Length: 312
Ligand SMILES: C[S@@+](CC[C@H](N)C(=O)[O-])C[C@H]1O[C@@H](n2cnc3c(N)ncnc32)[C@H](O)[C@@H]1O
Image 1 (cartoon, rainbow, N blue to C red):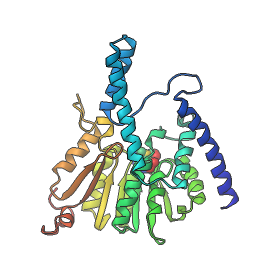
Image 2 (cartoon, rainbow, N blue to C red):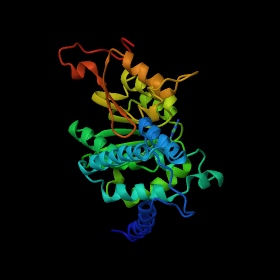
Image 3 (cartoon, helix red, strand yellow):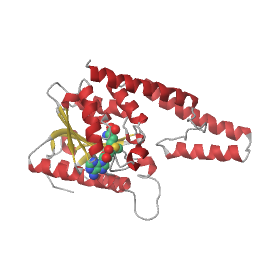
Image 4 (tube, helix red, strand yellow):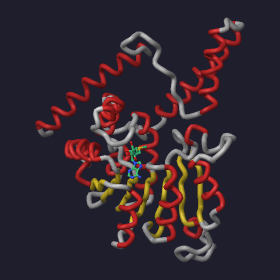
């Protein structure tokens, strides 16, 4: 381990210890309760009703019942992680570093161009899902659309062979500087190439240059998901037998809950996927929902091959 790595990991480990103490108390510095957060809107609904029950002095049976329901959710989440391979030290350090940064302050100080938040991080169970899937497919070239602090890029790099590469895209120059340091400090970081700029433009240039990827993970602007998928499947960015995984298919429920006015981008994307007859799709309820997309004829082997752009 280089001196830089030792320094980096020591700083991050200290931050992690502080955070663990904070979270075990379930209180922040000012002594107020840490806000409850969950991707499942049904769980958030239980939490909200519990607050009402406490505030209005509801029957203890009601309050306790709601508390038990939330405990079950926590137990299920813990069990999911227990039955999932542990993240690598490097991924854990990245997660800890992400949690330790004050993203609101960085935005206010003009260091980041866009609003970023810890919650964007893919994390342990989704990271393992990506690793499992792309290693099973024997992917070599991976595209990661939306780097943030590099968790998904790093997790996927760990599952690639020595000559494998993850090209990761983000538009925020602050993240480029941060991630260059992170990847330089991580054992598998040398497999990762960073490209900074609007991802849709970068992806279009890749198609023109004839670049292809075995596995594409989409985790950036939701309103551009349809474009990424079209470019992947119809314009040849996705190699033969390739897979696209799109994150946040549920998007805290915006994908499937009734809404007034303009439908959420997640819902628009879900409709597009559901109506696309050439795609094999499965929505896996990992974290905020991941949509796994493959060419239908590469899954249903008795179907004829479909040419780029046909049938949408
Ligand atoms: C949800 S985060 C990605 C999380 C990351 N995959 C991880 O594993 O932690 C989304 C990222 O996409 C970037 N992003 C959003 N829209 C973009 C765009 N149009 N072009 C490039 N980057 C974009 C944001 O700056 C942010 O860092």
